[in-house]
Amino acid sequence: MKVIGKFKINDSFRITGRGLVVIGDLIEGRVKIGSVVTFNTGSENATLKVSGVEMGDNRSTGEYFVGLTFVYNDEIERRKYESLKLKEQIIEVMAEEI
Image 1 (tube, one colour):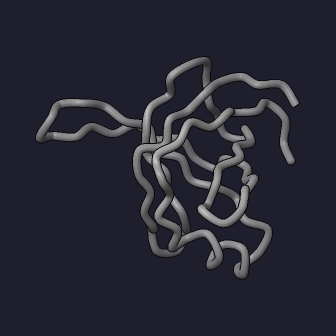
Image 2 (spheres, rainbow, N blue to C red):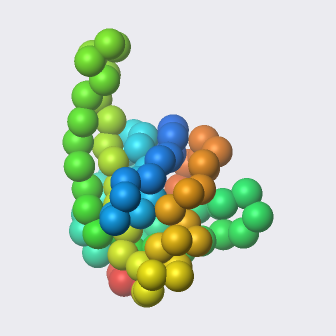
């Protein structure tokens, strides 16, 4: 797989019915739907395909951020990842699908 970008995870949270959302900054390259990312959950590395890329802003600071959502193989996998509270980390964005 080819690295097409780097993303800094600043925070994570859950959206009911969609699963895990990570927010942060694209620090190099690009990220798009279908890209693959691997992040550390605190106990293991998880590799997921990106299903959504959204941009938002923090009204109190005026800063922008990027939010990523993911594709899950099944409901069990979605439940496994949706309640994670990820630590700040820099991850690589890969071009190819899993």
